[in-house]
Image 1 (cartoon, rainbow, N blue to C red):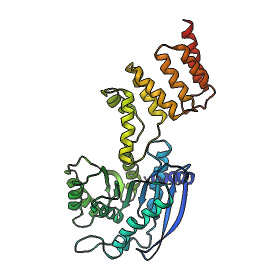
Image 2 (image 1 turned 180 degrees about the vertical axis):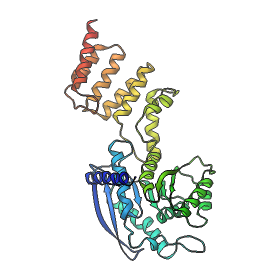
Image 3 (image 1 turned 180 degrees about the horizontal axis):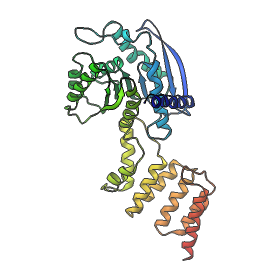
Image 4 (image 1 turned 60 degrees about the horizontal axis):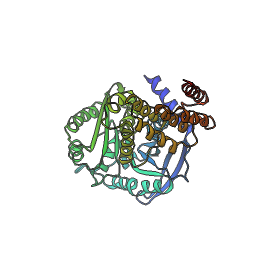
Length: 382
């Protein structure tokens, strides 16, 4: 297990070297000093682009930044989750002060209150002023940091939409406060918490008790997920919890897979194209940014349109692909497919021929276009 965990860290470190990692220092009035940051920008990040990215704040960035940033870079590469801006806050010498709370009401005071305000009123504006961060924000913490992130839930309108609490060292009354607050959340929010069988015993016991309470929360705006890992301890659970949390947070964003195709698209009462439109509108509504149409989803909707013999849906899809990918073979391929489906093989042949001059895609290349062209030619002869 130790060797596996080391291997995962090496993989994530390699991922980070392929993305844009920066080290910055932010001056803080709240902290009466400066604080070092680790920042990972998406691959091919373009500051001139209008595109914005979810912002992920990582507490205890000294050691937690690399596992989070590596996971995000790896999964984003395969289009399972969106590209994100990841910011780690270094706290190696200040974490106990940063996470300090009152021993009577168990809320941040003194240095803890200052750090709370630093994140909300200085760090986030600093990132948004200098990088293309969207207003969909995630915060992740481990141990004391995982408890601290909960305080941001107690604002009337939380500044974070997703919370990743890895083996939290919960303050007294926190479980009851969480249960009460999560029941009242009015914006779509996600909360993830994890422990493990070999976690620190007193932490594990309080986390299990907290989970039992949070499972009782009934709020359609809240998505709550909990993991109790086997064969993991207080530290190794981090490497297993982060990808699970990211998968859950961005479940709606994920490419269409076989399960979604069979259980949602095929039984869908509307057309496959209407399903695609709704899926992408929901992504924009929930995450606050547009998702670019991906080839995996185009293939799935085209397949469903053909299976349902829905010519109108296939035509609408072909037009959308042409709009989104005007210089790609994709535009010619799916418009040709539509003309074939309607029986107009002459127009289909023209589309496929024109496609030979365009750029290949992930799945469509010149060989496939030639095969489609020959099929159309054979159909014209018969």
